[in-house]
Length: 82
Image 1 (cartoon, rainbow, N blue to C red):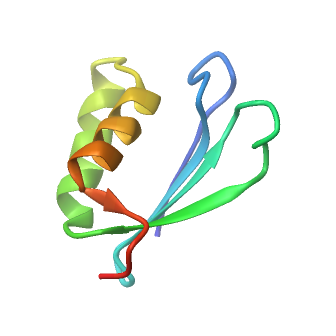
Image 2: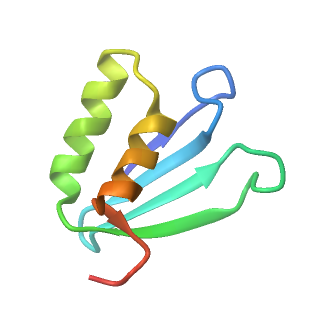
C-alpha cells in the first residue's frame, strides 16, 4: 500500500491518498471543512497507472485535487465495486 500525506499548503483539497494495489482501491481523505478526516474509497481499474499519474503530478508540482477530481469524472476512480 502506498500512502501520500499532504499538508494544507501542499493540497487544499486532499489530506491523504492511499493506493492499495492488492484490492485496487484508492482511499481519499479530503481537507475541506466538514470532510476533514472522512475517508472515501474508490475502485480503480488500473491502480498502477493511477499511481504513475500521481507520481508525475507530484514531480511537476501539479494539483493532486485536480488529478483526483478528473479521475472521478473519467471513471478511473469509481464508487462502484470492480
